[in-house]
Length: 153
Ligand SMILES: [Zn+2]
Image (cartoon, rainbow, N blue to C red):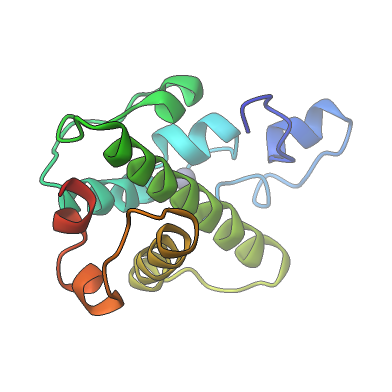
């Protein structure tokens, strides 16, 4: 993603793999050509997903509109390095779920369900945080009840 090598529609076109006009549209909003920039920074559907994650920590801040800035963005409520690690984990999971859902829609003809995507982010964030972060010691029910509290404590 950082090296702009994801096989998005625009990237495939640069390799002479051209899709039909309809297939070139973003699978989430179906209103713009799929680029990595659109998918992760400007797609209104994905932006809504990010806003759910930010609402967990009561952070209404808009996300950066540049992929590198997006990756480096640490929301205001996080002041400790541990909290930044927690946010980066949520960021990675969210990005992975967006890309995975995009692939399922594009290649398996799956339909997109916003609520399922958010639930998957919540489940996988807890799994990754519990498995890879020693200081994260919250039960799944605590995480589901108030992810923001678990992230900012
Ligand atoms: Zn879109």
